[in-house]
Length: 424
Image (tube, rainbow, N blue to C red):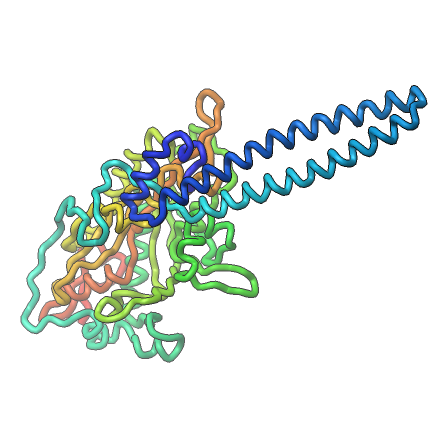
């Protein structure tokens, strides 16, 4: 979340940033935060004065008792009791103001960097680059859901029987392809210096608040109400929360982690062609890369992460493009975000497969993730993460773009992981 220091000292910058993010009632919200914070600080000063006075009176009691000034002692004791009651009231008032400030801060999105383009929707995103291998498909090319049925790779109907729509069952070479991609992505991440972790796929509410999924995305997360656990929508949540309430040494940074997990999203409100086949699932596999860095180096880290994801798509021989997201299409927590999309020749549309984001200090402030610099001062870290990669639409594009009259060709980089070079 935004720090009170930034909101107080750079109010106009914050308001302009929130306007770019298309955050409604920004001025009213920021004014309320600043008013409550002034109230909290005023109350704190009054509380400190009351406690100091109470301490002075308490010290007088011992002196008066030595002087046998009984009447004075009782009078001072009564004054101390009154001061303690006032202190309690002030403490409650201050705590209420602080809690309200915290509650409001959780609802305010991150402000975007200056290089984030203006815009309200995905149509306003800027195409930074296109690349990869362009494909020409045979006549009567099939979409991936028909290819999956033809080659017995994925059973969508069985998934509906076992769970519901959006929970496919991978079979035979379809399951092998999934596992091959997971291992390929993890190996590539390790080669790039990322340390692999295997986190839980259930997290507590504190973890959800730490990375900003709560309260913003509560309706999109599966919630286990009895235990108050949430199924993760991405490995970003547990991996970044490893560093919650941690003070790192500057020499440890940047920290680079990767993780494979199953991910769960309710995707409420999704419908139509966008949810056909693998296009939008409730459960899916994903490899995530996460970095914890210093403010001075985080933009360089972001560039390195973008290059890593682009390299994966190049090795998979897929046509891709990189989008710089506009303010209105960015996530709640991001300060700068690039999306990667692959082109589906059979569907004739672009499919998002990765978002690579820099969150500046926004998540770190929620997490209390800090580092101690060379001057022994404690500062907030920057956090970054990206999909590297999400599997469903990668699988969809691989099946569709590599179909031939002989079968579905496997990219060379994946053959050692699959154990076969064609699906026939």
